Length: 492
Image (cartoon, rainbow, N blue to C red; front, side, top):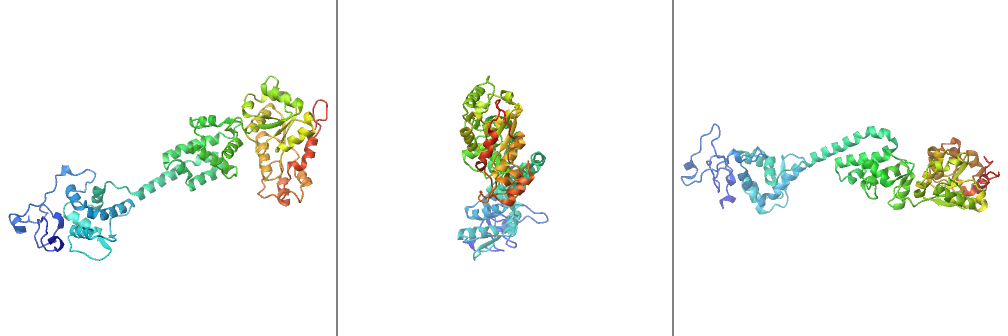
């Protein structure tokens, strides 16, 4: 009963070693030795011979090394380790985790009678009332300090719940490490300026953190491997597994779904202005745009009347098909068995390149074996087309290209002219103006500047209409027709 009625100046209901003339300490938290400048209290004055001895402090060698400001761990756990104080302790622990100091007050909403009683007893005050219950944290620390138990409320809480990590500080340190990581990439990005937007994107969207599991060290390794891949492309033709092994030592590092593959594909798509898709076909085409082969048998290149050395299997096949004037396909697997020397006998010849299969179909139908050699990229050139064009460049062949005069067509032509030193074939501003029609398909996207003719892009922007290959087939077929007995063309 006395536990609920005791107040300042009264004797404690529990063990007590002080007089009734000063603040009483509930729960046996009173001082246990003579303080400097004070006389030792008489046992008989506090309650006679049968009064319990004051609670002695534990020896210093029993104190935990992790909490140097705690004088008596056992008494601390007895005082604060109760279930009725659990919510109060957890509230203080939450503050410490968020990086806030234990000062001011802490409010307990809907405190139970047992919780209220336990807090009142700890603070040595009369029973409180009212909702919510407000606890002054400085008062709690004073009770612990004057009781000779602990000088720091922060360490007292950690002694009860275990070590507490300052989450705000952890977040700040992690943010610093991520900032340092991206700052360290500046020299590398100076070599790859076309990928700066990609780097900004994977940082702002959190994609790098997601791919690395939030670990800055793993992210650093992943970025190093990604930049190694990007430095090695575009390639004439290289299998995906071989590229992965070169860049990372792991031939499966660029497999679909792997973090490195995700980052590399995002970089390639952004650099080429494409919207990233999850489809397997898109991934294959994106890799093939930079000469990386995912599948050696898919996406072959279509050719007509192309010849090669009879000493090679590819040459025998091409010569047989050219004799009959029939189109045929060449796979990456076939083309990797030869190099430019297989086409060396035809270095003086002009080889034409078109964008759409319909041009080859028309040439085969109208000219057959009388057509000059023709290669079709089928839009953006895949690995097989790039490998073949690379062989022909190595052999010293003259290559001329024609494609659609629209937004994608200009982009493809720019790529081929830059990479394979091709000449434009009927793709000048004058050619466009002579063929453009008000009924032609509209240009719905921004027109790239044509690297071979500045006036062409201006005319296309001005007129806003495309000229597709199918609309100029007659002119193209006329250029492809052989007009001499030795198979040479006299066309421009």
